[in-house]
Image: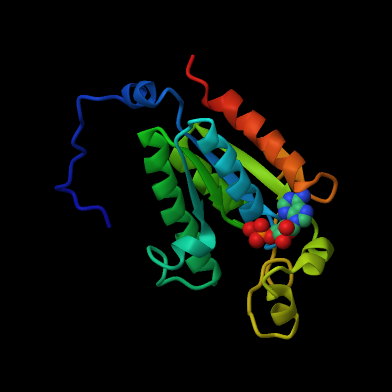
Length: 198
Ligand code: ADP
């Protein structure tokens, strides 16, 4: 609950001042897709390339946040929403600071992605990392689908919990058609276009 005595203390520096210092616009690159669709793999490679180009980038990832800030949350729908709400708040702060934020969150429901977009306003790129359940299940790099099928992981997206395919994402990375390198190149191009300071 917000306390009525709390007010927002404005600074003397605008977000554009911060962007000028960094020579780039902050942007949230919100990557959604099933587990094993390729979100983290693509984010890790994209981060490396952008850092190599001298860009200020930060990567946040669902599993990593669950070790700290979100360690009290599970996978019920309520907890998943809270997970996304906190992640989106963190993302919005980093974007306001001027960073290119690569955020990898399954974010299975359209309403979760809308919530994330709302927090960041117009500096938000929704990226659908596309791979169907069969493909992800074949890849299964962490053995999670196997465990989910065996009933060891409840509420597993794509198996026992829903995934709503994004209707109008800003970018689709079809990981069944394109290699990791191709997906990364497409994403880097999109980010560079968006983050350029005019
Ligand atoms: P997520 O973060 O979405 O759970 P990961 O990145 O952890 O997914 O796992 C994706 C797996 O799929 C990795 O083992 C990766 O090597 C493999 N893979 C195969 N083709 C692609 C592709 N085109 N893009 C991304 N990952 C791919």
